[in-house]
Amino acid sequence: MPYAMTRIGDGTETVSTVTDTQALRILRRALRLHAAVAADKHHTVAITRTRLVLDGDDTAERRTVFTLRPVPRPPRLTRTQYEDLTRIRQAGSRARVLADGRIGGMFCQVPPAAAARLFDRGLAVVDGGDHVAIGVAGLLAMAAYRHPVRTTVPRGWHDSENGRLPTTGQHRRHPYQVPDFSCTAVCLCGFRAAADRRPFAAVFARDHLEEVLRDALLTA
Picture 1 (cartoon, helix red, strand yellow):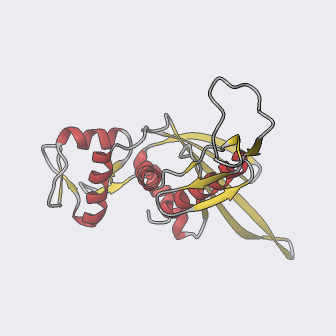
Picture 2: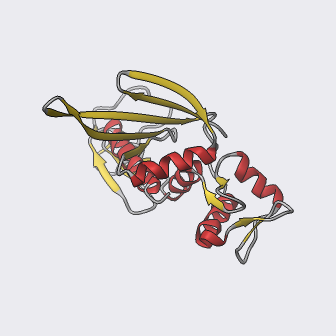
């Protein structure tokens, strides 16, 4: 799965296409240079590098931004794919692609057909010789799988005494009903954030997801 890479820096903007392996190398190099990384729910990665350069007798700050956008966006992981990627990650440097297409180096090897799907979607990449590593798409997909953050449904107009909700066919509130549009962003990891309105809770959910995606990139 290729990436559309946009580079903005020094007053110029360039667009190119990079492979999954190249995207992983770009990310690793950016981390070695202490660049800031971020990702959104569409798995678009932003890499920002700031440096100081001489400008006469003074110094000036120069910023270069790389954006890696998957084309197309990879689908969500299945449970089997998540387990396969987890085993590959645990195997570390022992994970190898074998002659028959299997991914070995672990107790439970990945069959050729399943391995081919991981490579085609950029979830796993062959990084140097026959070594298998988790790709950028795989890092983000695994993090999103572990953190299915969502927002709860507000009660809306309801009975304050027994909490009874209006019927589906009701298009107006009754005099005894009170409003409750509060909402909570929740995640399986234990994250919870309450808000007065659902759009505000959606912001909390988005911020949580972007935080875990950023942390996943730091492990490349």
